Image (spheres, rainbow, N blue to C red):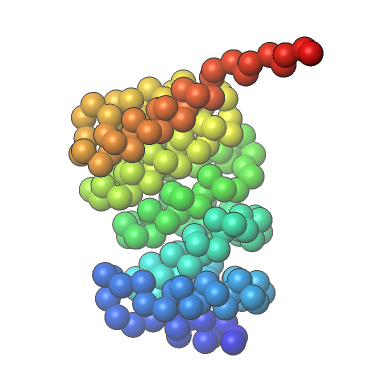
Amino acid sequence: MNRAAIVYALKGGNRRSIGRSNQVVAIVRRQPALFPALINGMHDKDEILRMRAADAAEKLTASNPQWFQPFKRRLLKLATEAKQQELRWHLAQMLPRLDWSERDRTLVVATLRAYLADRSRIVKTFAMQGLADLAAQDPRLRNSIRSLISSFTRTDSPSMKSRGRKLLLQLNALRLPHPAPTSQ
């Protein structure tokens, strides 16, 4: 299969369906050279194609985050400009998987914080998850993100409150001291 075939496989239908994105995931997993077609698809004018390309890319980079590294600047720019909720929620999951400089991590955090104002609860929930993932990687972010997530556990939808409580438990576990090794 070639890049044009990947794009074609992701087109058509409506936003309530992932179409053939799982089939595309299987193909790209076997032929990683096709991965750039997904990055390009996330920038396409067709919102169905953008959504499905993001879905496939998110699934692939859960186990292969290094595939994104050459495209991280494009993804960060896309994340700051994206308005489509399906694209935003996938980007919120993907961005924390990348290695960021301190400066760029600040931009990623700002972008995910902005996503917390989205109308979509799914975007908000994945933005909270993304922020928690970043805080797990960078201890300097933990207190501010813990405080932010805590506020959502008091004020938002039941699903966000539930996710927020789980994320707080994970973040709180990070600050627990590790037990000292026992000598025998």
